[in-house]
Image 1: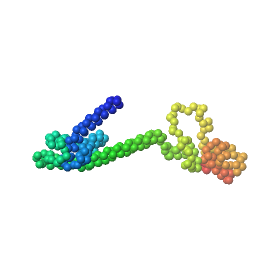
Image 2: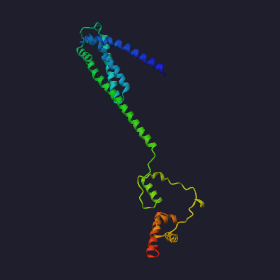
Image 3: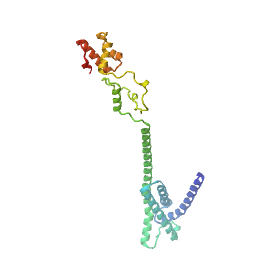
Image 4: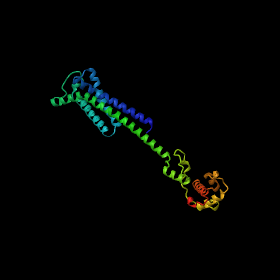
Length: 276
């Protein structure tokens, strides 16, 4: 439905309710004057009854669950009470003059019940009106808190989806140790996560041109090559770094060759067992 028809419908409803309130207001004013209310109280009495009916109607539209059921019972009770007062006003013509005390019904129990009903409605309006307003305010605050929680959960879920999973520390440490067999510990603060990549899927055999031209050498072969390469070296030049560069091997194996060569020079004999 478009906005203009909705506006016209609401205005028509307000007009009908206003005219109905005016008709009911006349009867309730006369009944209030009959049970002892003064002039000001008689004028305000219809607002107490029919006004609470309007408040209960709004609460019924806003509340949910058990609170909505309570608002419906209040609306039904005050509607029935207003109907009874209007009915009595129509049955007793003397009430139309107003301003004087009189009996509402010839049967005494009925008269007592009508007087009790008319005098208890203002007190009930205070109690039920306060309760309905408190329920409406609490319901609104609960909805705001629930909306805030939903937005927070949605933000957390979006953040978790956008954040890449952290790489475990154990695979990173294992990959570094295999790449560098040196016993020197790697500092934890060093940015090593970027150097570790996911294992690639094998796409075929490695071509011959891409393979390492130098075959894997055993410890004995490295020691023999080290004797030949360092035969003319002085003792102070016999370092692990120089041997590593000369033989093009790993630092750990270069240190083993250095130790073996120094042991040979010290004893003037081969030291194959030191390398193995």
